[in-house]
Image 1 (tube, one colour):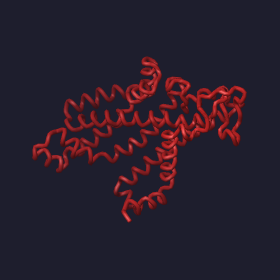
Image 2 (cartoon, one colour):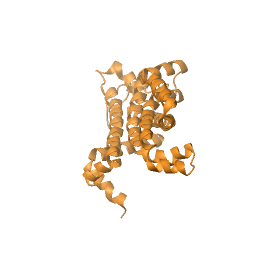
Image 3 (cartoon, helix red, strand yellow):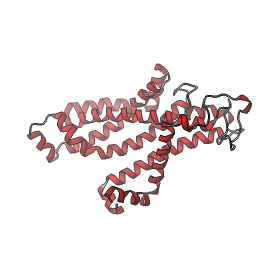
Image 4 (tube, rainbow, N blue to C red):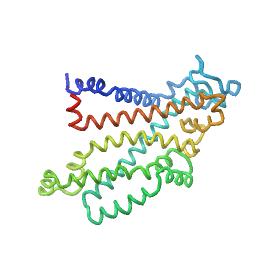
Amino acid sequence: MSTAAISLPRVARHNPLAAIGVVLVVLFVLCALFAPLLAPQDPAHIDLPNRLDPPSVSQWCGTDELGRDICSRLIYGARISMLVGSCVVLASLSLGLIIGSIAGYYGGRVDRFINVVLMNAFLSFPGILLAIAFVAFRGPGIFNLVIALSLGGWVGYARLVRAQVLAAREKEFVEAARALGASDLRVIVSHILPNIIQPVIVQAAIGMAAAILAEATMSFLGLGVPPPAASWGSMLNDARAHLFDSPHLVLFPAAAVMLAVLSFNFIGDALRDLLDPRSRIEAGL
């Protein structure tokens, strides 16, 4: 039996929250990929005679103010959250890797400009305000939402990568690669980045949780995916008027957002322990 096969059950026993997080993420991904097969009804189907029905055997999560099935909308909402979250993390991570690597590897004026001027300029404004301003100017939509959330998301990755590259560029293997005539691009891509990728992976897992929460926030403000597309944030916005007479309209989408955010945070914490040799040895993994 392989080492990975032996260690996975140990990881699950040592960190059950991580195992729960993995199960939830797999569930959300399956809902996102197979939403048309899993949803019991069309999420945009309006049935006014059955509006605001409570949860029942035929409709597990009840119906909203237009009689739409909440369970179906939750399943389709997972598609929006997973798609936007993944694209935001991918775009932010890619931009952060490029800018952070350049700043950390070359140092000097390049580093001062990127770190002091560029990064601080973006950090001086809250990321959600930048996203709101961008979407208000460009209009709602998945593409604009991804760009808007990536505008401020790349800075955290860039600062992390910069710090790691600053420490790695003085190591012996980097000096050896330079002495052998390797180009700067080859040194960064082939020698530095593979040795600093571990904390970046942890940051990406936690960043996925932040991206999902940001998408729900933007949709709650009416700046996310336009209707009739189902989104957890827009469902919460529509449910505000029925908070006391039909609380199930708020509870189910809020629980979906909470579980998605918690699951990626659990996975991020577990990855941090697994990728740290000292923590892995102490845990007996």
